[in-house]
Length: 161
Image (cartoon, rainbow, N blue to C red):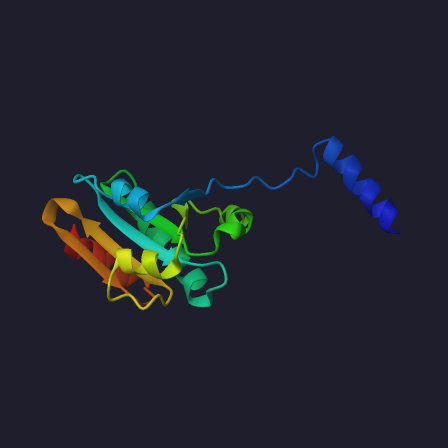
């Protein structure tokens, strides 16, 4: 029975009916690279720190995606930064692909969890989810250790743009 299923799957894939799932680009990023990425003064950045195993994180991801879609073409950029271990890169790629994430997705490349957390914000306990908003033009850099609804995110963006 197992062999019959394997042969059927093999035949379907060779004629293109069972195409493998495409993987989403997920780029490892160090803290220094993140700082460079969010330094453009013409853009407001909303960086969401999350993990595939974090239920509140996964629950709020659609809110960040909706915000990115709502303001498409405007100077706002949502960055989804996974705090999963670097060894989980393929799992994060699969996760992002299955959910068809449109925002830029990164994986924290951190030699030390605590050092990375402290670099992001000295008051961050490391709990997830976490969100940072950066508007370099106005000198705004705020960190929130909480789960956001879409309305809260939208208000956060509106008051800091």
